[in-house]
Amino acid sequence: MMFSRVSSLALLPGIVLLLSAANLPAIIFFDTGDPAHNRETAPTGQLANSGWQFQGEYKEFLGTMISPRHFITAIHIGKGPTTFVQKSWFSGEAGDRVYYINPNFNNGNGSRDISGTDLRIFEVYGQFPAYAPLYTTSDEAGRQAVMMGRGYPRGAEVTRFGQTRGWLWASADNRVRWGTNTIDGYADVGVRGPMLVTDFDDTAGSNECQAAFGDSGGAVFVRKTNTWRLAGILHAADSVYDTNSTCGDGSEFFASMFNGAGFFTGGDNAACDNWTLVTAANDLDESRTYASRISANAQAIQAIIQPAFDDESKTSRQRFDEWVAGFGVGSGTEPGDDAELDSWPNALEYLAALDPSAGDEPRRPFSLEGQPGKIRFTVRIRLDALARGLSWEIQDTNDLESGNFQAVTGLTQVGLTRSLSEGVETLDYEIARPSDSRKFYRLEVTLGP
View 1 (cartoon, rainbow, N blue to C red):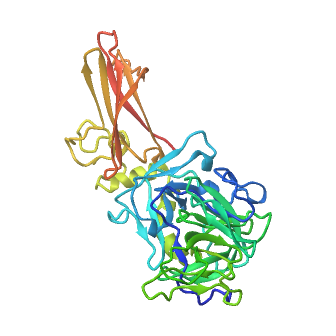
View 2 (view 1 turned 135 degrees about the vertical axis):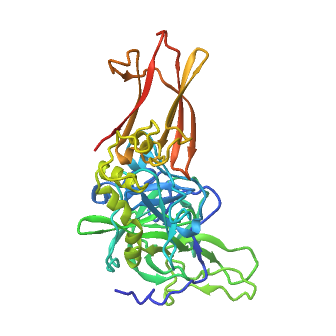
View 3 (view 1 turned 60 degrees about the vertical axis):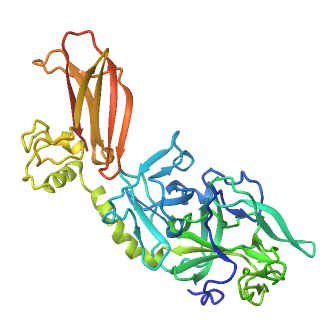
């Protein structure tokens, strides 16, 4: 279904990307200017499980988990940090979950863009506990949407003839919020592909919202067959208004308007021809939000993230066997075998992301060093160890013949070095030197289900 009101829409004056260099918070509401409204708390009731649980923070913006190890956000927010963080208010857990982004993804590019859109996919090391289903059919129009972002909250009223017509954008507070709207139709915005469109209507009591600066990359979820699915990624919004069409007078302002009739939308340009009078006739009276449309790109997105689903369906042993085979080591090799006879069992080299076919590997998976009054252990661990079913424990015994090893107690972590290009971190631990005349130490690695 195509709504005629937006079917031929191009990039109009007054549309800006939901981007800013500052630290940015979230969402303009029709009902309230309370900065605590829907802030860092999950939707409940009929809106429960509407996508909040799949959000995480990338840079000053949001991303959405869409596979066991992929998240999606907006291209125009750029690249920067090495982490994707699911805050405790998203997961409901006591602490934040930090995931490290794989720089080797897409042949070293570090991300994968959907051509002709504003959609960018990243891959992380490890595995997300859950991820959003995609909206794959072209029937979003008319359905309720839940929108999430970290953009500017509501500021002072914008009035005309003594009537409230909308609200300015307030100062940023770097907090995440959610609101609701209805998908009104579709549009093309510049060269960034098909968009979902929502209007900022004067609908009281509904958490009606409009996106603002800083909401870029935020999610739009739409419910179908009782399941909330990712339908869009926030891209841009109508926002630049003025009381006149005079160029260079400095009177333009950023706002969300539910009735902008009589104002001008656009922006100053050299030719001074970029202002348009807002009327109900030209259907510019309500500010609109634009979100990159997932359904139009679902096939391309699914092709990128499918390997993560394939891995998720495999057992830990199957993934180990594939890892060994990737180095040309013959089938039937066991985790406890030592393929190249370098005294390091395959399981230890798997844990350390080393080459099981290369002898005399210089990067040892486990080492210890005696120091005055203490012993230091160094362990090399792959960042996706837990997702691969790997666990480990430093153990000791004073009787090597009995083989009665026990977990070493009193370990204190004293160092950490992380290499994202290798996908590993090297951990240093210390213990007080034991009083026993002799001790034997080992690293026990378990490949579990």
